[in-house]
Length: 91
Image (cartoon, rainbow, N blue to C red; front, side, top):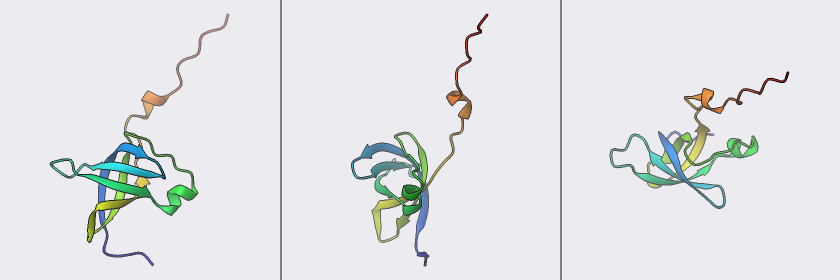
């Protein structure tokens, strides 16, 4: 049963720590609040890779605003930057 008292926020992964822990900087915070976060079970089960610089959606408890759970990795806005380079012509 999902918990109804969660705060959904978005942020950017600043650092990757051991044990699938991450430091995430919140985007809606004016002073750049940094939170310690871990990944949810579905991301772990489906082998979703999270690296530094990725935009993520998190759930936070209203009782502890220093920790969170990453529930979704956002799609990249510029996927053309990751296309394969053009191959050389072979004559």
